[in-house]
Structure formats: structure tokens, C-alpha cells
Length: 416
Image (cartoon, rainbow, N blue to C red; front, side):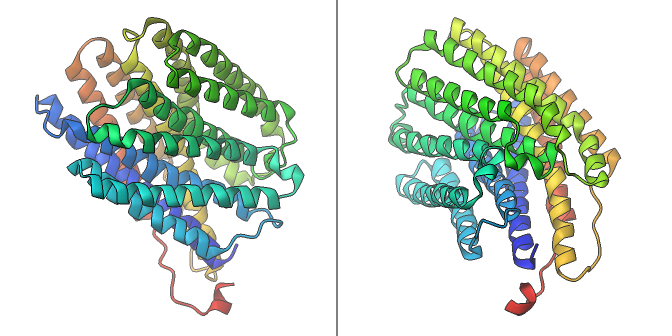
């Protein structure tokens, strides 16, 4: 991989980790204050959610799929386009957060326009690259990413619809839930499921030779679409049907993963690194399974279902741990790719096993404390979320600082 491509990927990843650091640090401050009964800036949670999902997660997910497209010789990617998307989305998210923080219509509009421009541009480019790929390469990981990108478009459109309601304090609950689930069940979860395939099996699963895997992607997507639609028309009793379809997609995905592992093309060192991160994967998928089950409880008993536990397991268990695992795996590899492309200027080591072990243990314990608090005491819940945020901030900050590879100014020929 060229210097330019390696540098672009590392830029996406480190910017994502930087946004994750800001999100986690802000959450630690907010929930640390709440432990002591200080609820100032309580409305900032909306800004915090968008900082994490749009800034940290979306940029990171774009980088992860960009890396897969880079591995396909049939796909031609113009570097200036992915650089521009990175810059516009990063600036758009920062302006959007300011707009939420100050509840300012003009600032919000500018931020939304930036996010929309980058998001729709990414979706258009993803479709172009997808069609350039060989047919055999479209049925695996890239199928998950393509369906996730469609959900991203729906989430962006619903977010724009809700914008006026936020400023007038009249956000309809049905559309808010539709927006949230389009982003988290559609874009975030489908995207992560695809990246899980890529990390599990190396480059081979990109060919999509596991038919049950393709089926699980379509089933999950169908469940997400039905879920969003039922929330939008406020048919909560029918949400149970959508949840059952999503659960079926999850089971199909789990059934497919051992077959994916048999196709793995990872080097021994890559497999060793993956094993070190296995606890992140196991806890994450356990969190996803429990999140789906709690979704049935919420739909059947709304609004008295276990909303707190559902959110904690979905965001803190599934999305956070699985996404952190992806960054911990990818960032060191891409940093070494860049060093190699620069002429073998050295090598960086993956995170130390002790750091990884302490990270997943700390995150798991914090998540369990928060879950216990959601059933027993608000103070315990705040303590658990505070610890979860603090550990996440440390890991994200470590990734930003430890894997910075300065790219010297070289000629165009040298870059290639």
C-alpha cells in the first residue's frame, strides 16, 4: 500500500479515536458531576451522543471500509475525495456540536449541512466503489457496508426532520426512536457486523463465499427497516415482529462465523493479535444478544421496560467494546503499513497484552456496575458510567498518542 493510502487510513482512524477521546472525557466529566448531585449541562447529552456516533464511530467506520476497498485491485479510489470527506465530516461534526451546545439555529444548520454533504458524498462513493468491485467481492463484507450505508442515509434524513423539533422542544417520540434505531441498529450495527467478518477472516470473506452470511445481512437489514417503520408510525406492539427478525439475523450471523474462520488468510501474528482481543469480541456480542432480548421487554412493556439496561448493553457493551476492538486491531497495523511504505523507518508494536487485558476487564467491570445501578441506585449507575467513560478515554487517548506517524513532505513520485 502506498504512503498516501496508508496515511489516509491512519488519519481516519486517529481522528476517530480523537473524537472518541473527547466523547468519553466529556461523558466522564458530566457523570462525575452527577455522582455528586450536580446536573449542570444536562441537555448536553444530545451533543455528546452525536459527537460519539458521527465523530468517533462514523469516521472510524468509513476508514475501516475504505481499507477493504483499498485491498481490491478492481476499485479505483481518488485520494482527494476521501481526504475531502474526512475534512468536511470532521468540521461538520464540530460545528454541529457547537450548535447543540448553544441551541443556535444558524450554527446547527451549518453543521448539519456539513454532515449531510459528507454523509451523502460517502454513500455515493461507496456505491461507485461497490459497482467497480468484482461481483464475487460484493457479497460478503461489502454487502454489510452497503446496507449499513443505506441505513445511514435514512438516519441522516430523519435527523434533519427532527432538527426543528429540537429547537422548539417538540421532538416527537416516534420519530426520535426511528432516528436512533436507524443509526444504531442500521448504520452502526450492520457496519460493525461486516467489519467483524473482515477481522475474523482476513481478506477471504470479502469474496462472500459463505451464503448463510449473505442471508444474515439481508435478514438483519429487513428487520431494521421494519423496526424503523413501526417506530415511525408508532406501532409498538408490532416492534416485537421486527425484533424477532433482527434476532434471526443475529443467529444466522453467529452460525456463519465459524465458516468464515475457516477461510481466514491472516498471518500467524495477525491471528495472535486477534486472540488477544477476543474478550472484547465475546463481551460485545453478548451485549448485542442481551440488547436484542431487552428490546422485546421494552416493546411489550413500554414505557416501563428496562430502558437503562437496554441502552447500556447496546451502546456500552456492543458498540463501544466491538468498535474499540476494531481500532486496537487496525491502528497499529496501519501505522506499520505507513512506516513500511516510507521505506522501513521502524516498526510500532501492538498494544501490550497487559494493557489490553486491563482495558477489557476495566470496561467489563464498569459496565456491570452501571447495569447494577440501573436496577438499584442512580448514584451507582452514574459511578459505573463515569468509570466506563474514563477507561474509554484512556484507551482512545493512548491510540491517538502512541501511533502517530509523521509523514515527511515528499515528491509525488516518492509517494507512489
